[in-house]
Length: 224
Image (tube, rainbow, N blue to C red; front, side, top):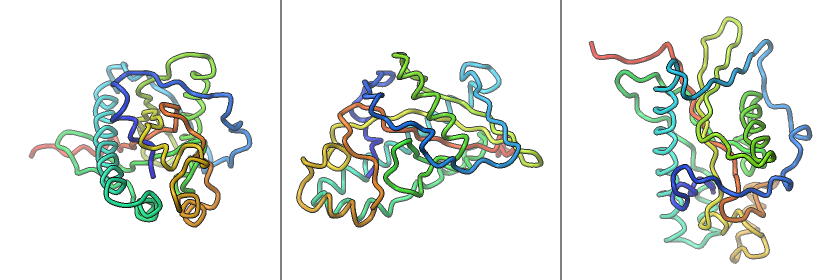
């Protein structure tokens, strides 16, 4: 299950406390895919050249999060947690519908330094964004609410990404908190579907990871 439900429990713009020193060193993580020659550049979200995209990407992420919250809450309310795990592990983030005069969303992804689902493995650019947030938290600073990143690969279209950090909400702790507090069958279900699970032992409002959306800035549907 996802920890994105922080959107329901945390006021907009509120920084979440984090046990930063308990996070593993990213040098020990798999490097992730990084195309040869790729350049990752962080851009100021307030820069006029990307401000509209940053705002739109943030809204897309909020919509994706709200949908996941609804699905997770529904499953938890109607089924035992262990059964909900078996259903929610099949859920994928669907691409949103195209919006007039907005760049096409090419990908939606949840990723973290501490993964549950290996399908969410961060690539090189994701790791750069995760490291940026982690460094801000270690320094005692409030992490950027929205991060904009430009990815340039030779002979490929420019990709723009918008990231938002998310945290674990109280409702997420039924399968992301202390395993000793999990309900009947939860640990067994997690072991079955996620044998290399690292996404446990969170407390409420601790940083969980990011949701990001990718855009093709050259593909913007317009009114004919």
